[in-house]
Length: 606
Image 1 (tube, rainbow, N blue to C red):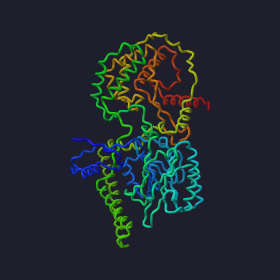
Image 2: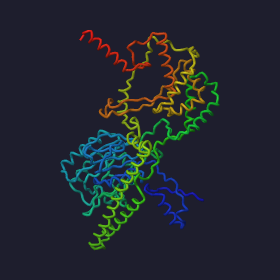
Image 3: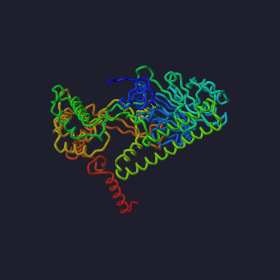
Image 4: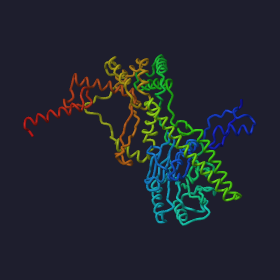
């Protein structure tokens, strides 16, 4: 058996096509070749097109994006703009940007009539569309608005793409019209570079062809864009053809920054093996604590965190930052693939007849009708495939409501990346500065005791069985997101069986040293968007800080002991204190206020 590595493949090439090509060259049966995973270099793949407000064209675009592993799709005249985190649309719905990647982070910069701008990593992508039926004055006003967006995001690299319905020889048209001259002047005034290459039409209709889909970029970005081409062979179910190009890294060997990879580990809790977790914890419990770190609260907390990490790695796999692309949408079938191939063949026959000018008008019209019928059959089949997939989904919903349907809905409601990873740096600094202002130098309370001397210890009782069992009970019933260590509470509960003595030693050391370990003071910040507030203001976000379960367990023990001291020895908390006290709640406070009010009314005070 021999291994052969092939490079320079297009993203649209499938393993079956590779097997057939090798079989043709070598004379060996295609079944004798085994094709592994097709990987691609660190580039950002962009697809551009106009969908003519056709639902079938948008459905086919989603399948094409999945097949070609596209990172960003710049769309003019979409059929609809789904209200999900993967889509960004203009105010009038005539332009959109589709971010199909699960881990791809983006944020909308600005939107208006006929355009939408979104930040994709370091690049600002502007999707545009302008109707051919509007006046030249309207076109100049539209360009002035887009120009303002480009100037406001400077010096960020900018990509402007879309259908502006302007003809110019500068991007391959057969002539230059008035709108084309206006657009040429606009491009030159902003210092943008034209990325269109060749004279292949981007719009093909019965009446004729044209090049109206254009792509511009700032010089720094234009130098990194390669292989701009019109996909003349691809079926789009629209009058417009797809345009493809790639954005290369800033320098050789540097990965393209599609988004920020989460710095915290995450494991797939649904694939947890409890028995393996317990066995891994037992193995870690056999190892003795080194004498060099015994008595050091920070070092022992770090060692326990390493124990939990080993248990998590052994019991469940890590979640991927960017799941592997499946290569198709959920409703795509082999029948649809065959119909798309038939449509492609019918179009080739029709275009060949027109190009060679050998056929009679009757033959040309017959070939065009055959091409139209093939497209109609594909549209009908796509609609039926989606209906069948939906019926199957409803059947699963009736049988297993907490299975795939539940996970699908949760996936729709949650965003793929945190807001902090896709916000503009300036806005993020402003939001964090407002939510967490600098308190200045730390000044301890006047009742606080002086810091302990080196090696000094505090006399206090060790963690009791009741306190430890309370901790485990809380972990067993918690269903909250983990902290920076990524360890779920369920795994912590399993690991604390064999690692009970280890964790108790950590807690007792922290108590004796009057030390809260440094790693337990580090939190994972998550910003939650307030829909009713502006997105570019700090008041539009609510912060949530996730902490490690081990640190929260230590906090619970400290809080319970402080409350016991206040209630047992004093000075006790005020009688009107209801918050954060066992057996009391805001309902008790409201009830007490109601009694005071009723008593006042009975005494005739009001």
